[in-house]
Length: 262
Image 1 (cartoon, rainbow, N blue to C red):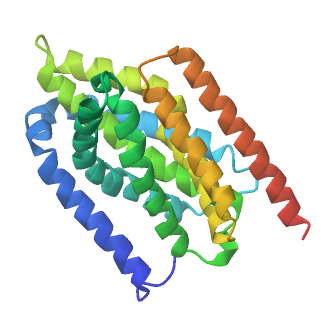
Image 2: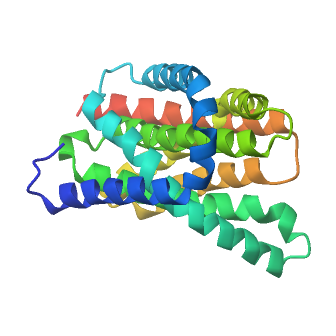
């Protein structure tokens, strides 16, 4: 990370502070009554975070990671995009319902990627601006993007747990536990994956390869849209997302080998 006097650093810190306060206000009605339940199942969130952190770091065989940078990426993803999407998703879902005959069914497919991917992408760009050019390699984009996405993913899981705890007519714990386990399992191909792919594109953007960036962004956006769409087999969707990620990872490995010989 660069020194605090740079304007990007202060913008970064202000964004996280605003996101944290905004989330506390926006989600208070859910988190306050579900606090005890969330505390009980908190080990699941911790273990899930550690597992996905380990999986992401497995992609970094060259040890290009910067732990402090990845931690900041996680914190940003857990605060700023989640805060912005709280408000945007509601409005976008309503717009989809008004414009399409079956818009209520497709609302999540449109609202999710539109409100979440751009805000996560802005975070990746901002974090990349905080780093030196030596960290503008494809693997860095993948790692930063993955941890921004993972932060978003974990906090979203916590939010869903709080909501289901309140809405379950039988048991707060049962409602929260069921949705948490389900979302943890399907999390193998979720926000961390979409943002990792887009992060590779952000590196291309920093090297003035605009069309490459648009391609990677479209891929991450499209995978998110596909998952949220109310059609298709869930297992097949997960498989498609994982295959897409593997192909992007192979591209990153090839680019890393090419850069190493220069």
